[in-house]
Length: 109
Image 1 (cartoon, helix red, strand yellow):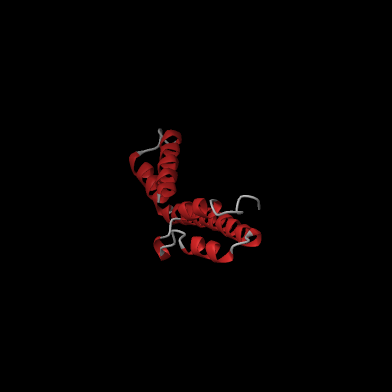
Image 2 (cartoon, helix red, strand yellow):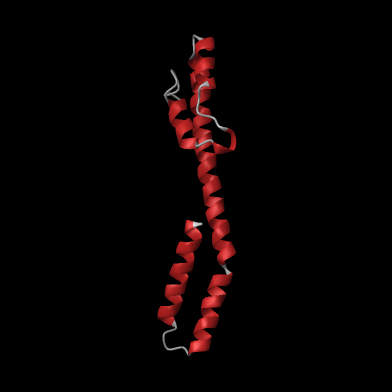
């Protein structure tokens, strides 16, 4: 959503600066056309968020896999993995990534 707003503002300002000699109705038509591309900016923001989340979860999974590969105490590690801050759709990946990196043996992957 933020990317959409920033993109629209930048495009509107750029248009207003380049079209300052344009008559009133044409200027407003240009602003309306810029606003009509809002879905494109919304999609770009959603796509960039998905990429960031994917990279975050990949890092968390790599840390967990490294901890599992290096453990001598699987039951203790299983309890620590179960204690990771997972809350379904409300899970905050940075918290999970940081907690997974703190698992014993997770740091060297």
